[in-house]
Image 1 (spheres, one colour):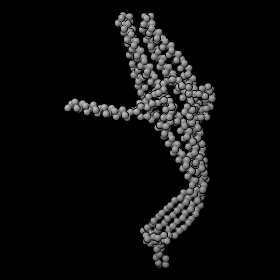
Image 2 (cartoon, rainbow, N blue to C red; image 1 turned 90 degrees about the horizontal axis):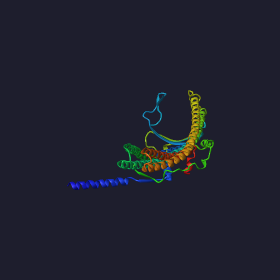
Image 3 (cartoon, one colour; image 1 turned 60 degrees about the vertical axis):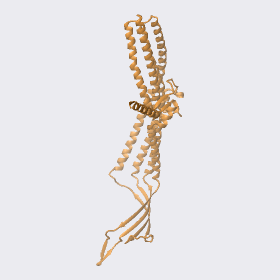
Image 4 (cartoon, rainbow, N blue to C red; image 1 turned 135 degrees about the horizontal axis):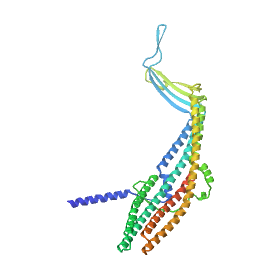
Length: 445
């Protein structure tokens, strides 16, 4: 009986594992895939696109204010008590017990102080502003995705380097143990080799954790199921992304920033919108003119048995002018508020321009620094690798101490990590510089 139960449990475990394996997908990614997925799958970008679509409808809605309003009204009245007039001793009842009315009304605003036209201009400027914001969010999303992508590659490379450091220190420990057993190494050499080996294990575990978390961050940006597995097809290598901007001066890059940055363009459109808001506030001082046309059919009966012949038709055309003379100063206050909002937007635009200049300068110097550092890291890696080789060779020949080997190992590990980090910085600073001058879209368009 117990054997049958064990077989059933084993079968259920196999089925469950198979089902879970089917649910877990393997996603293969490379450079172009990152850009395509970030532009098409990112949730924040989809939300921004919906905001733009809403504003597009708001623009059409503003145009609808120029059209007349047409409405139908149907009304049935039961008079519970009719008015009675007494004249010369006689009672006269006025009206009927029932009233039926149908009306078709048309209202056309002829002049509203320009508010409809100005509101349409506002909606157009907001639409343009959101279009620029959408471009900016596209650049921000692609930048974040590529930064996370390079972060995954860097984490993979660092974890491999950490694994290599563990293997090297372990091999060194085994060699020292052999020398110690043969009497060619001291107790101190053995303790140092053990300390070096065990010190690499936490670094390796940390590298594995960073590798997992960096992959999860990339999945989040690309809207990939967190349970899926990623396979990165690219390796960590230098990539020239600046192209025609490689040799531009800082002043030229600053001018590109003022010309192409989407967030700056968006703010300028918002300034235009607030200035149109001032005109709406001024338009409140002007009269409003409306044209109203109406056609009515009304029947007055003492019973509910109404026929079409009982209705009496009437037509009317009315032109109304509304000129508010005093409203407690509300219109003056509205105009002052509109002026303040325009001033706020101009201040925000100036602050954004200044911040954009700082971003360009920071990213420009960061790129130049990463370019120089990468060459230094590459040379340091070559020298440390050769130093480690010579240290191991000399120690094996008895011409060097274990301390020299350990120092060479530590220098090599640090140099390799710095070199990998230098490649990452070189690529990411280029992306940041392109983003700061509003030209990151050049890498996918």
